[in-house]
Length: 498
Image (cartoon, rainbow, N blue to C red; front, side, top):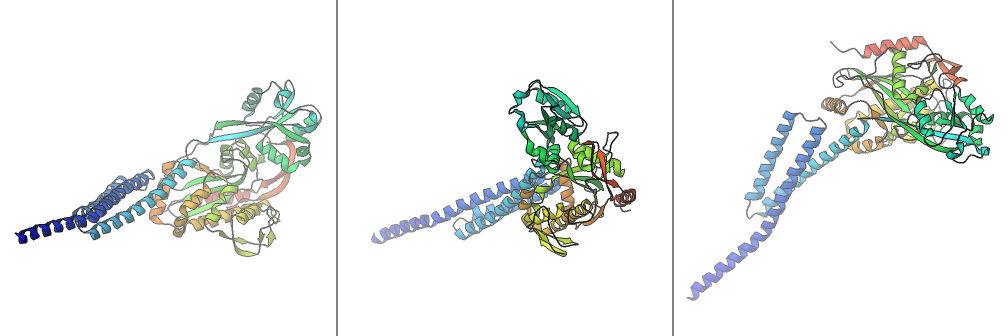
């Protein structure tokens, strides 16, 4: 009897011990199952993001899904079948966590890219900011005081009627049009007008050239005119066919949508078949006929006052080409990309201290620079006898250095930093699908691009302009020989291999 009781007690003790053993195993099993579920969810997120980026075709998506599901099956099986072995559960959990980290990291990069591309594509607006200026001694302090007063407008204002109606909503005034900025400014001193209306581009020009008027006047009212950009692309298979991009570097002090002078004008011929890019720099002061205008020619930079499409079509007329796409860049901001990639190496053909930033001193030869000095280098013209010509060459050198460095696969590790630096600095009429298709092609080939730069040239002169009227400004009269040479080079880059 005692023996039987002892056996029962021993059996019960063994059963309780088994339950105690199963508790930690059961906990480990739950953790493993949760980790496996996380692995599955994170893999789904990654594949959805990659599909949105067009980096996976349908058949590739199916194969990738099958691979992940297979891994998921065996890992889940490991978690479910190892009933009392904590080691099995732990192994399953570690595998699930590692795979989840990989999937989530990939999702982060893909989602970041999607957001960036969506931000620079789609419908774009162009915003003109206008200010109403009066003399400080006039006694006018608010817009309502201009009731029934004469207000001056530039007749070449691209939004003249919209500008007048916007101001009319604020006060009932008498409009007076001028075809010369200098004459309009003089009218306020002669009491012919009580106020004048200037867009930001004209304001910046006056601030650079007429400090007396800036000191004598004040702004009593500002307003905006906003419209959808009329810049339409000429689409092409960018992943496989050569195409032309007009790069407009805006000198806007505000957002990328602000209409401003185009201080950087570069035509990019991109041939994905040969892996070559041609940069054709056109000086900002090039004396050209603005597209759709008659009479006086104008500086190319002033075309930007009328929107990026005016700059593009003017360049098309000049070079006899059809531009496929435009990219508008806030050059002052996008230069921050230089810091994101750890600086760039530039070559200076002379020693000088930058006019725009005295902290940047450039020695003769190759040197490493950060974004601050890269910007100063790209804006420098006073250090060179050729002035604006050399500034264009410096801008091309900076762009080329950025392209060359971004072509190195190791900078994929700084991918999100680069996108963050570029955010808000670009807009383009390339579509989302065109950008992702081109990126997919380049990622599959990891091609190192060859970049060649050329520039148009001309002779300095003082001439009246379409935008400013009879007031003479510095311009560069085009050298037709350099234009013809650029046309021939462009045609060469547009050829496709047999």
